[in-house]
Every structure is written in structure tokens, then in C-alpha cells.
Length: 230
Length: 230
DNA sequence: ATTCAACAAATAATCGATTTTTCGTGTTAG
DNA sequence: CTAACACGAAAAATCGATTATTTGTTGAAT
Image (cartoon, rainbow over all chains, first blue to last red; front, side, top):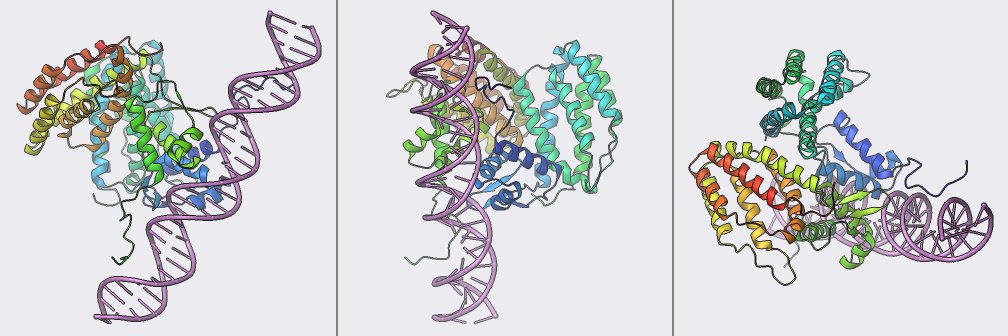
């Protein structure tokens, strides 16, 4: 085919740092590295076949999202959450999310309703505990779980609030990864169903209450399972 | 004096990227660059007398905090907030901050009370509009304002919630910078005083109400003053 | 006059190598 | 035996230069 005038980024080819960033984010979230593990630019650069600058940029971004710690002149590491920090994250979620859920239920349109239904259906149909080859959790269920909770809130129509949810979810999941190893998730199927029902019935009071309780129970189930004390 | 065993970071000398990052953050927040202005690594590197790598790292961090936009292969730029985005930020603040304020008032100890008093005193004594040489706002008042609002919430004792406040405040201030040029702040002295009084009286209902109204009024006063429509 | 391709300049992204700091080991003074 | 130091290896931070992409311009074809 003839080469038309260079369209910006037409080839879909993305920056190397973007790829490495995505790799690091996924690997850390997936639990490929243990909490406290050092993330050495040199090793990563060799593994990924890129230069230090690329790895460095990716690491800086990863730190910005709370997925890694940085000690100046001492390198990067996977964060090891304390029990205290895990509780703080859980508390922040149950402080904020019920309020946003109310707003979402008051504002969500029919399209939102449909997406809530779809997200719940998908979550309910995804087996929660089928760790595949070498994995210690189901990434499929984990993703469906995230989408369900996020979709519930998306009716609020406020990207800033949803960004806040995203950040807290990331932190929450990162902590859960390792807590869940010893203390697998309790069955929250009923809670999720009640959440969906209350949301679609536009019963903000019940929904907010169920969500708060859901978060409290999850936090309680996982407390005491994290790595080091804070 | 003899050189003792290298203590980590003893000289207080910090990384170059840290300095450049601080410079960029302050310059953008201060309004040294106009919304939409390109942040060119080459120019910055020359200005700051450092290499591209450190500027690049600083820029990536700045983007991570929402203080700059990035278009792959097209560089970095100071974000130009739309009116819609400004309203979303304001709504997010009045959705979350009153709830956190309640928690803070219920939990804050005497030390917190003292800090609230001090922060309010400082804010009340700082003249709001004495733009110095070439400045279009008072950085002293702006900082006192931030500290007051943050201190009010610090009683909650939850770093995650305070981080959320920090992010929203940054975004809020960045948008306010340019809105305030045409539409200077209204006098919020009375509202701040009522906030302090309600907080110290442990009247969570009143405090949350005043804060919500304070945020609503501020948002209303600044709406319609941003750069481009969204 | 308008459109599109080829070329040139500017800027972003990446790389390879150098400098700086930390970490680990062995040595010596007390 | 302990503690402070010196030295070398490892890793982080920085730099200078190269490669790739975008942007602006020119000129020919329609």
C-alpha cells in the first residue's frame, strides 16, 4: 500500500517504556515479585532487552502509582505492606466508596444499569479459585471483581472520583495478593448479588450499607495476614 | 574533619532529578507556565544545567501527579483544564472531604486541636491578595490555605485519605490558578472561621455542612473562568 | 489555487558509557 | 574482640550521542 502522509502513531507501535511499564505493573500486581524484592534496573533491562533509561522511566511511573517503593540512591523495591497500612487502605475504601455509590445510584442511567448487570453476571460466572499453572490466584476473577465494583460506581459520572477508586483499588489488591495466600477469600457471592440488586432497585441506603459491610468483612478476613508489622 | 564511614545520604545532597522535579512542580503550580505550554526536555535541560535523562524523569513524575499532560512522541505540556474538568474536581472534593472531616472531628486528639488552631490563626493573619513582583497570586496565602484545609482533615489519622486529599487539592489549585486571574477569590474568611469553630466544638454535622457549602461557593465563583470548553 | 509527496529541521525516545554512591569484605588500631 | 577505616565490587544516577518520530516547508502534479 502507498505510504500516506505520516499519521501520528498510526502503526500502533508504542513506546518501549510503555511496554516495560505495563510489564512491571502486571508482574507486580500478579505477584511475580515478593514484597520487599528489589527491582534492579540492570537486571530488568537485560531481561526486557532495553536500555536503562527505559526501565528507569517505567520504574518511576510505577512508583508514582504506589506499586513500588523508592529509596534514593538505593533503588526500587516491591512494597511490603504492613498490617497497619492494609487497614488504612480498607478504611479509606469504606469511607469513600459508599458515598460515591450513593451518587452513582442517584445518577446512573439505563446504560449504566445494563453494564452493572453485565459486570455482575460475568463476576458470578467466573470461578473464584482456579489458580492456573503457578499462579496463586485467579486473574480472571480478580479482573471481573474489579470491573464489577468499578462499574457500580461509574454511574456517578465523575472521572476524578473514579480515578480515586482506581488508586485505592490498586493499593487494596496489592495488599490482598499476599494476605490472600494464607487466608483465601471468603465467599462474597451473596454480598455482590445484594449489591447489584440494591443498585438496580435504586436503593441507595441499602446499597451503601451492604458495600460498607462488604468492605469491612473483607478487611477483617484479611487482617493479620500481611508480611511485617507497621 | 576526617571522613567517617559513608553514612547513607549524609551530605543532604539529593538527586538532580529530585531538584528538577521540585522546580517543575513549583513552577507549574505557581503559574510560571501557561496552560497548554509545551515543556520541552531540551530547553529545560539547558536551563537547569542537567542532562535529558534527569529532566525526563522529573517530567514523568510530574505527569504522574497530574501536573502535566503527555502525548506519546509529542512531548509534555502544562494541562489546560476545561470548565467541565474543574467542576468534576470541585464535585469530587465536596463529595469526599466532608466525610473525612467528620471522621477527623470524631477522632482528632488535643494535638490536632492545637494544630487546627495554629493553622487557622496563620491563615487568618496572611493577607490574601498581595501579589508580589510579577505574581498573580499570593503563594503565602495559598500555602496557608492548603495547610488549614489539610490540618482540618488530619485528625482522621488515615494517610491514605490524606493522600487522596493531596491529589485533589493539587488538581484543584492548578485549575484555580487560571480561573482566579479574572475572578479573584471571594472572601472566605468567615467560612474558614466557622469551620474552625465547628471542628473545635466537635460539631461534625455543622462542620461537614459548612465545608460542603464552602466548596460549593468556591466552585461556583470560579466556574466559567477556565481556558477552553470541554 | 489545492493537494500530496519528498525533504529538512526540530524534538522525542533510546542507547552505551561514565560518574557517583552504596554495599560488602578485609585490615588494622585500640 | 570490637570498631573504625580502606578498598574493591555492585548498583544507581547521570551524561553525551544516536536513532526514530513528528512537524514544517518546498515543489510538482492536478
